[in-house]
Image (cartoon, rainbow, N blue to C red; front, side, top):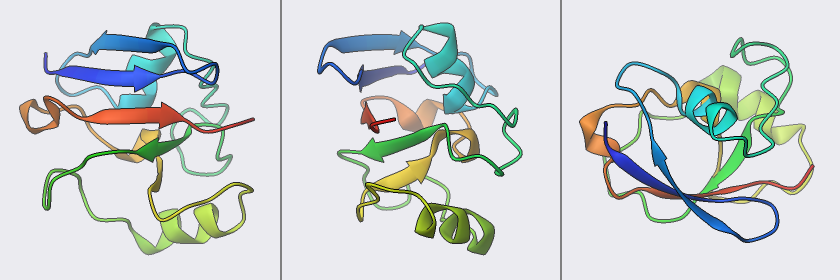
Length: 103
């Protein structure tokens, strides 16, 4: 379980204890951080939108064309935007910092 630092929408920092193999979306929901994941991780709703603060090159899987298309339709998208449902929890995420995007 890699420790991941997550800031909620209020700016409060939380350390997630995420299980390997889960998606980052599941870890955020389990921690009660207002990530809905309405579509269950099927990349069709955007309610798991996050900002990745400090990813090292190769630390995250690349953004797929489908993820990029959905992100393009969301408000408040930045260069650091990702869908947390598309990021599997692996030991390589240790030390990652994320912020939950606004509603």
